[in-house]
Amino acid sequence: MKSFLKVSAWFLYTLGMVLFFTYLLFPSEPFRFFAEKELLRRTGAEVRMDGLSLGFPASLTLKGVRVDQEKGLRFFLEQVRLKPVFLALMTAQVGARVEVQGLGGRAEAGLKMPPTSPLKARGYLNLENLAMEALTDLLPEPPPLGIQGRLSGRFVCAPEEEGLGISGSLNLEGGELVLDFPMMDGLNLKLLTLQLESRVQEKNAEIKNLLLAGSFGTLQLQGAMGLPAGPASRLDLSGGIRPDPAFLQQLTRMGGIGPVIGRFVGQREIPVRVGGTLERPQVTLAGMRL
Image (cartoon, rainbow, N blue to C red; front, side, top):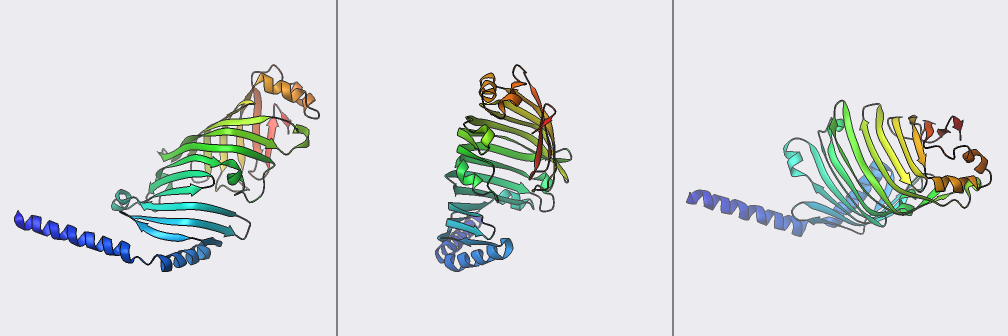
């Protein structure tokens, strides 16, 4: 028994000294230069970091991360922290947690999955108080609308029958929607919440339920989207809008679109269909293409 305790004590002492000198002598500057070069080679994005350090017991912290891509994608993150999930590694899976401070708020994500089976992944994504203006700036092209406010939410993923289930919700605080359409000038539109329940398969994503709520009422859609996700991804969604009566009255008093919307006054639900692609969606409202 004494010999076992003695061996254990020496093992812990040796392990502690190895970890101590690893943190003390870790070549942070050479590793930072190597990471910046490797990211440029693999992604084509120029990444600059103010600092890089190891944390206890096992984490890597990047501070002052600036990303500048040739296509115009630019953003700044105050801090990024990476942590391996040892339990996943012990079961021959890929596993990590990422914590990000930037874009006006904070985000945290965790994932573990078999290296060759992404549809068997388990993970989560938490968003806290992100600035919508900063998020829309990440898009390759400016959208025909602007969204102000703060975004928070949570999504989880887990294996389902013949696919990967993804579900969650988003909440917008002060979600003011600014439309860049002359016929809707002066329209006061607010977004409040978004709920999603879906299943991802190899060639498409099944949208079981997509519910968007705001000052306009509620929009609910079901259908599918082609994969991989990109500008050319096909859309096939259908559902309906349950309009807010006060919002409909506001639309009918507007020039241009007013007479068109007037035909829907009094309806409890307006049929909606979304086709086309992500880059060029085709929206049909009660059989009328917009």
